[in-house]
Length: 105
Image (cartoon, rainbow, N blue to C red; front, side):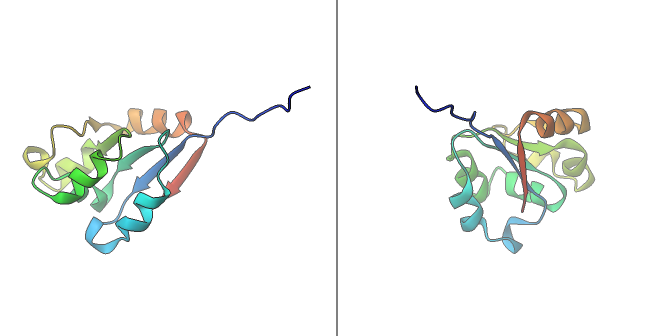
């Protein structure tokens, strides 16, 4: 008889602080291929299209999202990488429900 294996738990990483005030390298080491990343509050700065942080996040090969309300509140809509979709609070809740574990950065 083969042992029963648990389904892989997907994780939602939520970056709410500026990438310049967070240990991004530590976060990147914790990200697994099945995870997703949500940028909110000052974390949306990581989605700036001209920054190398967005490039590093996208290179992970996982879905990366930015909370639209926080991007708009900071006047950054035109500067966000086009490769990072903007999501609303409804989508935020869906992402939270979709992932078994949430990690706050």
